[in-house]
Image 1 (tube, helix red, strand yellow):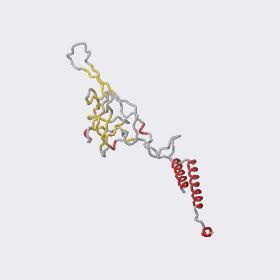
Image 2 (image 1 turned 180 degrees about the vertical axis):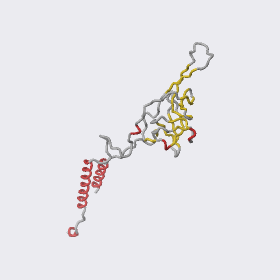
Image 3 (image 1 turned 60 degrees about the vertical axis):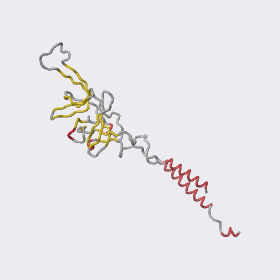
Image 4 (image 1 turned 30 degrees about the horizontal axis):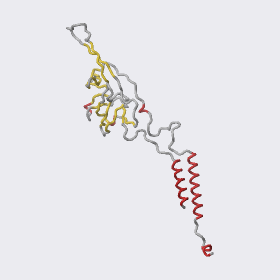
Length: 230
């Protein structure tokens, strides 16, 4: 009987090895969470109210989620890689599209140049400094009435400059790829369902278990009364 139990344990271990493993989630627990501005009206707010809008998140770019809330989520945009500076604030939760992967290009890294001119009479010298060009890190666009402004950063200060140019940039498309649901498995990817060969091997192993059980039980039959009297 002891040998039979050992054989059963070995066969069950073999069957377990044939079964497919469950799929691993695309984003592991504890990893950074991101959400994309999948529409052109996703505002970055200084506080949890719609009156504190600072700028529009560049379309198809991401914010890192610090805390997901019901109405507003605490987020971070950009990082502290010079000349950029991370900024924290809030976005409306229902305006964001959450993803379960870490994007390769979450933030728009763009600098702009603004030229300031000295106007008026009474200048002296050769006018070498009548025009000064200043570079800023671009964060997003905002509006005051119909006037358009850029929210920018330079020299440790966040503020606005007039939008004297159009900001053109490449759009992200990685969030459009299916990451969960009913997408078709890619060619060569492991399937979660057992293959025909696995099914055949499992059936053969179960048949072997049944045959061994019958054989052992038949060998363990009690002796007949006539044999005992003899």
